[in-house]
Image (cartoon, rainbow, N blue to C red; front, side, top):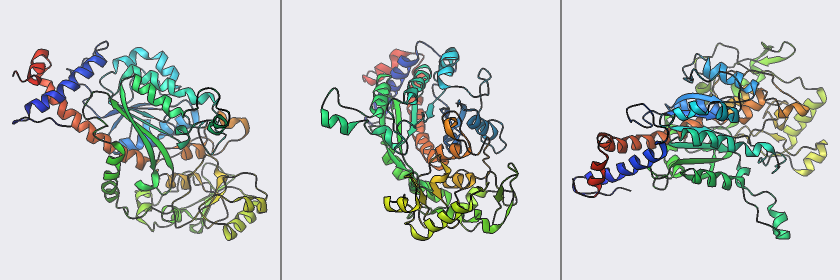
Length: 477
C-alpha cells in the first residue's frame, strides 16, 4: 500500500493527495465550517436502529452516536429509555433539529435534507440494518415485500451525508437469489440475482468500495450461532482502502484480542447454560413487576464470567423483562416430552413434528452445552434447555450479549395482523444486532479511522496551498 522514498515524504504525500482530492470532490458542493478537518471524530448515525443493539456495541468501542432513526413506537421507546434518556453512560448526542420520536428513514431523508447536507464531513460512519423479513429464510421470503426496497431510503441519507464508512447488517437470505430454481428450469428472462448485489451496485455508484461476508455471532463471545450478512464500505479513493485492509480478515485477527479483553475463552464458544443458568426459576419467582397477571424469575448468584459481565452491578435488583409465560398444562407436558426425547440444539425433524402434532418447522429445544440456535422474533420457537417453557425476554437478551441494565419497553408479544405494525419486546430482542459484534466491528473501524487521520494530517498543512501537494507527489518539492 505504501510507496516509499528515502525519507518517506513522497509516500505520505501521494496517499494524502488521494485523500485530499477524493474528499474535496465529494464535499465541494456542500462545504463544512470546521477548519477543514474532515471526518476528524468517530461519529455515527444508526438507521433502522430497532432497540439499539448495534449502537450500543459501537458506543462500547468508543464511537459517538449522533442520532438514530427508528419508526416503530415500541422499539423507539426502548431505544429512548436506554440510549437517549439513559443513565448508564451510553447516549446519543442528538441534534436539536431532529425530534426525539419515532420516524421513518424516508421522512428524515426528505424533511431534513438540508440539515443532513450540513453534516457532510462531520459524520464518519452510517450504520444500520434495513428490515429483513422479505429476505429471511425463517420467514416467507417474499421478493415482493415492500420492505425490501427500504434500502433506497438508506441510500438517500448516505448520498446526503457522504460518510467515510458504511456498515450494514442483514440476514443471510439477502445474499441469496429469489426464484433461482424456477429460473433454472425455464431459462426465461434475466437470471435472478440476490438483493445484496443491487445494494453493492448502488454503493459503488455512489463512490464506495464494498466488501461483504457472513459473520457468526458465536465467534465473538455471543452465546448464539446467528450467522448474518455484514457489508462494510469506505469511500473509493480514500486511504486506507478495504482492498488493502480486508475487514473480515481484520476481524479474525481482532477476535482473540477482543475475547481476551472480555475475559472470555478463545478456544470455544459461550454456551447457553453459561449465559442464562442464573435466570432459571429454581432461584425463585415473584409477581411480575410490570405484568401482575404473570410471574417472573429472580436472580440466582452468577456462576460464570459471562453472567457477571451481563449482570454488572445489578445483583440485588429484580431482572428486567424476565416475565414467565402462562403455559397451559398441555403445553408444559408437550415441552417436557420434547426435552426428554428430541435432539437438542436443532429444529425438530419431520417425524418429531408429526408425533407432537406441530405444523411449524422452527421449534428448537436448546442444548445447554452449545451456543443457542439463532433466535427468531417468535418466542415459542425456542424451548428452554431444562425447564418446560419458552425463554423470557431477559434470556433472549442474554443470548444476544445485551447487558442486564438495558431495559425493554412496550408489549411483550403481539399477534395476527398486528405483527406487521408492532415491535414487542421479544421482537426487539430477537432482531437486535448483538452488541459484542457491534463492538468488535467498531474496533476494526477505529483502526481504519486512525490510519485515515494519519494520512489526513499529511495533507492538513498543505490545504491552503493546493499546488504544493501536487508538486510534492511529482518530486518537485
